[in-house]
Amino acid sequence: MPALIDLLLEGRQAPQHRPCVRVIVGADVWDFAAEQLAGGHWTLMDLWGENGMVHMALIDDAALTMGVVSLECPDARYPSVGRLHPPAIRLERAINDLWGLEAVGLPDARPWLDHGQWGIRHPLAASPQPAPPPAPYGFLTAEGPGLHQIAVGPVHAGIIEPGHFRFSASGETVVRLEERLGYVHKGIEGLMRGASLERGVQLASRTSGDSVVAYAWAFSRAVETALGQQAPPRAAWLRALMAEIERLANH
Image 1 (cartoon, rainbow, N blue to C red):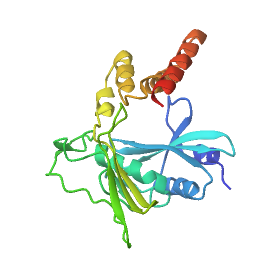
Image 2 (spheres, rainbow, N blue to C red):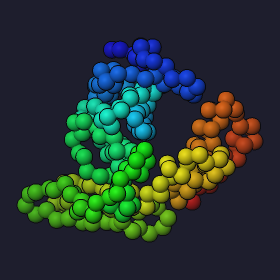
Image 3 (cartoon, helix red, strand yellow):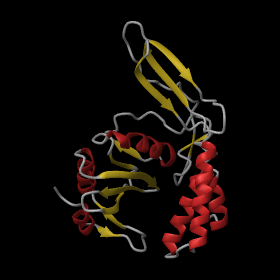
Image 4 (spheres, rainbow, N blue to C red):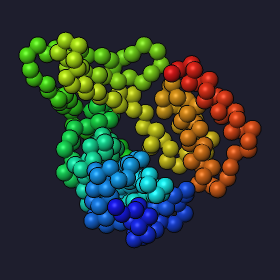
């Protein structure tokens, strides 16, 4: 079984990337990484885009190695990871909604975050386009005798984020559950561009109402890692205390 470190040594290393190595690879290496995910050899941490490039964060649990592989896609197309590794499908749908990068071979190309209410398509692309009138969302169907549907949300009690959940059930047996999210997508990725660190942590903390501390902590750790700094022990204890209070209050 190949190790992730071997792949990272083959690619063109991107400078000034912390804490793990990031390499720029070709489509063949990108496909190879997807195959390793599909085989259960590596773990997908994240998949995201930017103008002209997609990135995939990976963990090799056996070798305790973490790394990021990046693929240039000047024609706004790249080989789908989700066609081999289904957990990547929603991430690739989000990449298409935000950046307009098409995952070739993606089994499910429905919009994920874009509900047709933004007024533009692909808001993070270099040249966003006017949006056409929104089309009805095609929920997946479930067929069989005695099936009924139960719709929940998108409005919920409390401070959790809106989400629509559609249950297809036969008695107490749930045959299919499909959710749709993104109802209050705030455009935080775009607002982060050019923001100061003080503004950035404010934006991060507003990602989700029940995880304010968690998101602010994650952003702060990312900044500290990028700058090669470490928070003092008292700050670490205060963060832990606030996170525990948040967990007790909201979860």
